[in-house]
Structures are given as C-alpha cells and as structure tokens.
Image 1: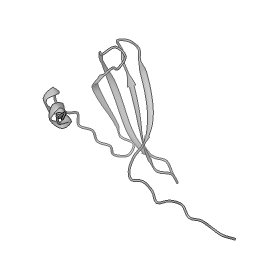
Image 2: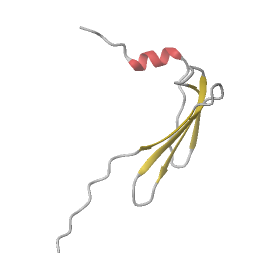
Image 3: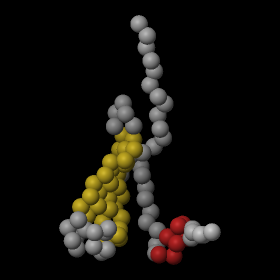
Image 4: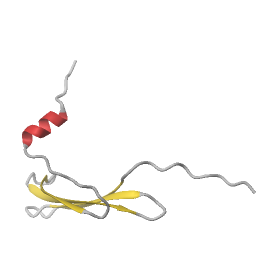
Length: 89
C-alpha cells in the first residue's frame, strides 16, 4: 500500500507561506510562483471580485520574466448559490 506525504507539512518546509487576503477587489501579489514552462520563479496576482446578480469570482494572472509565459484564469469563489426557481403559467 502506497502512503503519501502530507502536502501541508511539505509546503511548510519549502519556505515562508504567502499571506493571501481575498477581500473583495483587493489585489494580492505572490512574487515567487513556480513557472510550469521553464521552472523559474514567476509572479502570480490574485483578486476576488463580485459580479452583480451572479456570484464572487477569483481572477488570477501569472507571468514569468524568464521565459515570457503568461496565464490568466477566472474561477468561481465564495459559496455555491441556491438553484433558481421554476414558474408555471
């Protein structure tokens, strides 16, 4: 049977954890993010914002100065909203 290491314990030994504050419309910069293209250190920016009549989303952007790799993602944030309602006429 294969045993796996605890990811949290491994992450703590790698270095100082980045403090991330996901308050609405607050941009967080994580300066030492691993670039998946070249293995160098890049920069990640995170921002949580609310889209009216929809929900909260997390916008993330990564860029690497060493190789020029860039990536942008939008992910759902916050809690899942209740489902809609059905109207019968």
